[in-house]
Image 1 (tube, one colour):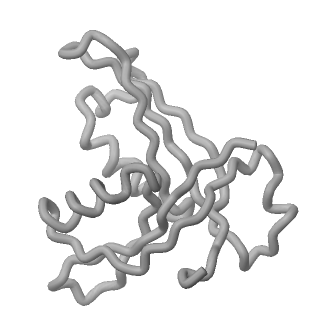
Image 2 (cartoon, rainbow, N blue to C red; image 1 turned 30 degrees about the vertical axis):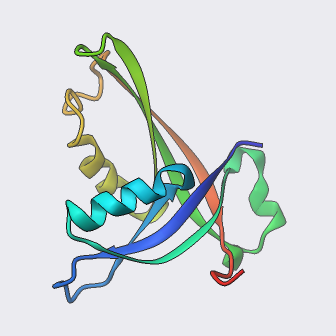
Image 3 (cartoon, one colour; image 1 turned 180 degrees about the horizontal axis):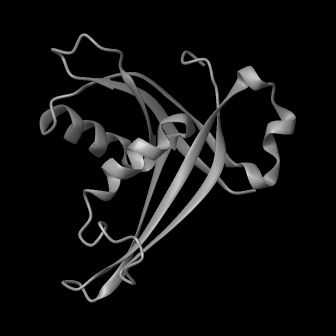
Amino acid sequence: MASQKLVRCEIRRPDSTGDATVRYVPLEIFGLWEFLMRTKHRFDVTQTVASLWIDVNESPEAAYGENQYERVTEVELLRYSDRDGMFSRVNRYFPTSDYPALKELLLRHYEGASDPTAPQLQIKERQGIWIRRDPRA
C-alpha cells in the first residue's frame, strides 16, 4: 500500500484576519519547511499533527469512516534541469478541495511550468486520504 508520513498544519500571516489555510508537508522535510515559512515568508505555522497519507487506489477509505480522514491530492512533478543536466522529482500534497488553485501557485515556482506540455516538466496526480489523529496521541 502506497503511503507517506505527512504533517498537517495551518498557516496564516500574523496580520491576517482571514481563516488559516491547511497544508500537508512530508514529515522528513517538515522542520526545514516550517523554518522557511516562518522566516522567509513570515507565516505563523500552527495546529501541527503528523499522520499517514494513503493512496485511494488501495481502497483504504473502506476501513475508515468519512469523519476519520481528509481527502488529499498528491502532485508529483518530474522536471528536467538544464543547469544540473538531470531530472528531479518534487512531491507535494494539497487538500483536494483547494487543489486547483494551489496547483497554479506551486507551478509558478518552477521554470518552464507555464507550459505543462513542455517535455522538461511532467505532472502526475494521485488521490489519497490523510488519516485524522488526535494531536495529543
